[in-house]
Image (tube, rainbow, N blue to C red):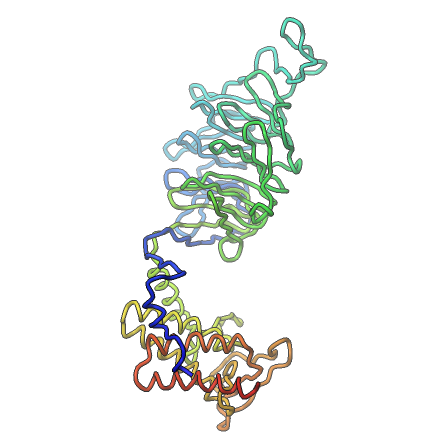
Length: 491
């Protein structure tokens, strides 16, 4: 069988490859931490390296893995915003600023948003925009009221005649874009130059929905979240990024600038990191404590995500591929994923973690055996070789436990040691086929499928070429010959 085959060593000796080696450089690895809460986290902000959050209209501070209530903070808070190097709290009874760990009330009006325009902090109530001057918010509304972009209202002397005063609101968000203030109404974008409420500046495109939520100025683009995609303003043209464009979830909720030229997008089903040529999707359970994202804050290589189920923290830590491999190897050892030389998943039964009696002992162990073979080739470490040998012997057992030469068992169950029950289903949805060994100590599962066979040939051939010595080489060769012969004999 092996006399006419191409060996792995011959492949490695080629000078021209279709693959490119990956240098083990340092990169930033996402590491998640989930802090669950009984009530939704409605807003979050990062200020001076600390994370502040809003739960039940109160301000909380993240300390370790706990959100602790800041007792000296005001109540009735619905949004936290960091602007101009200061932390602001928007409340039902006014707006507050944090100064030397104390909250100071600046204005009694209910503000809905803040932005920095031409280097000056601006704030918006539902109907007006104010600029901060000498620690006071001063209205920028013209004395004679606002003008309309409707040219039919224009008089000969340049003034306008209105049956009813022109409204700037209802304002939900404000943003500075391309040197101009933009106002977001429900389903409508307004260009405001300080006098004219311009509703007619868009030359092309419309919103996909009237359910507009948040707005972010980012370079040459102005992003607006909607429940039917992420709308983008470039100059005077509106377009919308949808699922077909790569956006993982169209029901978008909030926006925040990232720490590396990226944009973070909150959605009803997790968070999205939008890069120049890629999308990174962070869903609940694995990354976040809840699906619906209410707010996002970004610090130095860290992202805080406020959800209905709590606060998600994603740290970007310096990693190498070897460090990442070591993390998973340590996890496998510490959590006890190894059973009889095989690699298994765990599930919780009551208060106890149980090793699953796999439906694919060989299929699940083959990638681990292959990984240890490659690792040993690189490191030459005896402990890596020992891991490979142990996994190989387990793969070999799947053949030897069966009384049919070359027919590999799908999995093995112990009558005395396994706490998990034998699986009841077989390949293709058919009933499982379990057979006892002659000594009655084990059951082996039949209905073996082609993916199991592929896993054996792939991993054991690597073991034969890269790890095996002496008798091990003969065992590996014999194992593959037995499987191949059985398949050929069966036609």
